[in-house]
Image 1 (tube, rainbow, N blue to C red):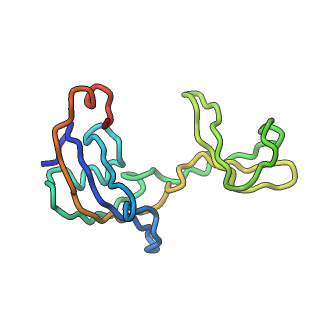
Image 2: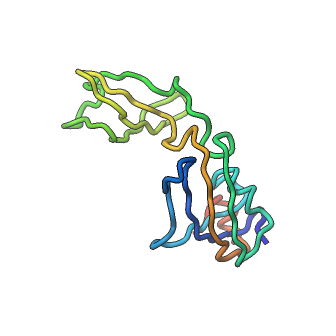
Length: 152
């Protein structure tokens, strides 16, 4: 049964509120993670708690239990020259910016004249997501996995 400190393996499919495919394990390895330590979003983790291998799941996760609300203050204008050694700065590029608590991933969403718009919101922030899938396996985590907080 899925509970804290279990290693869980799932096959999954994720769609947004417009039924657009966001992610899927189809054609790839299933997702394997350590349950109860924040390795997946809270809404999905809570929804599959207590399930066992072979069980299916279907859950809709709100932004607050997923990737958070979209925060407009996480969008800023930055001079293109701030990207220094990058030969050509383009929309869609991702970088790490230095924040007060360490590195923050940012994505360039627009370029106008000599300024780039960078967005530090997670790409799925503000989105309601629906997850469906099957629990493939549940096992006890090793002491090493528990101490490191992730699966080996």
